[in-house]
Amino acid sequence: MKIGILSAGGDCPGINAAIRGVGKTAIVRYGMEVVGISNGFSGLVNMDTIPLTEELLSGILTMGGTILGTSRLKPFKPSAGETVADKPQIIRNNYEALGLDALVCIGGNGTQKTANLLAKEGLNIIGIPKTIDNDVWGTDVTFGFDSALCITTDAIDRLHSTANSHKRVMVIEVMGHHAGWIALYSGMAAGGDIILIPELKYDLDVVTNYLLERNHKGKPYSIVVVAEGIKNKKSKESAASYISDKIEKMTGLETRETILGYVQRGGSPSPQDRILATRYGAYATELIHNKQFSTMVSLKNNQITSVPLDEVGGKLRLVEPTDNMIKKGTSLGICFGIK
Ligand code: F6P
Image 1 (cartoon, rainbow, N blue to C red):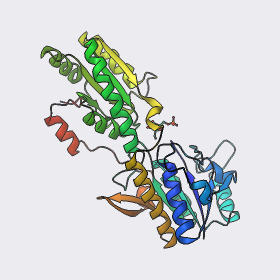
Image 2: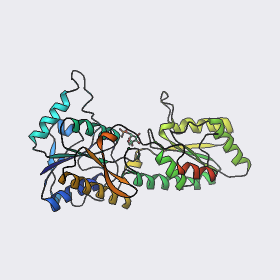
Image 3: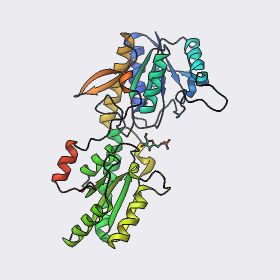
């Protein structure tokens, strides 16, 4: 059999471990041929490929980013002068021309949505859930999340000493456009006093009164962890600058902000992500061998399994207001910005 692999959407640590898991299982266990598709779905449109040999796959387990490159091209979203069928038709033709028996799509929500549409066009598709946001429906966790958590937790740890030296309120913005998993988990791991996530509509009065109360009790500083997705979509201002400006104006407490940005997606994957990505990749090849297509590999109660792509496509796994971590955090006295 000949299988193609692509990585699409935002990059993250662990993609290369997943590519290696798919490729080595395919070559070593099943004697399959493996083709890398460059830059996400655009590589399928432009027939931009690279043969993935065992030599090429060795040494990439610990490498950040993706050796194949990625893009956010959405083939079912026509460009000017195109019909919606144009790019999918080109992809179908190139899939055939490459002689592919299956295609592995490594990506987040948008990628799995496209993967599902291509499966409906008759391509043999397997999805692998990847994103630092951890918001892909159908799996307990995506690889990339743990590596981002290590980075954000370390960053927040570092803010405590400088906040304490200056007796300041420190606001740190982490990634998470729709879902607040990174803010919630790193806030809990690094002793955040306030954690604001897109899923819980915060009240500025609750936030500022909580900070004044802490100050009144003699607490020397406070750490506020916010997900980028809490920002007002209409405003150009970042969540961190908006919140820190409001806090300083409404409380009189000296406040500074940090926007962590793309470092959360950089560097070598954590051991947890290396293992998870490898397990996902290896299982994706098992599914291909067993011809169980139109599925996405997933982790459920720490078991590697798979879910129909139809159930996943375009859905988000958001933090529920009743999430246990929110209950635990609240009982510890952490403020989530709500009454
Ligand atoms: O999807 C992962 C992610 O890092 C989000 O957390 C972030 O909002 C987005 O990608 C940034 O997208 P881009 O890399 O296209 O700027």
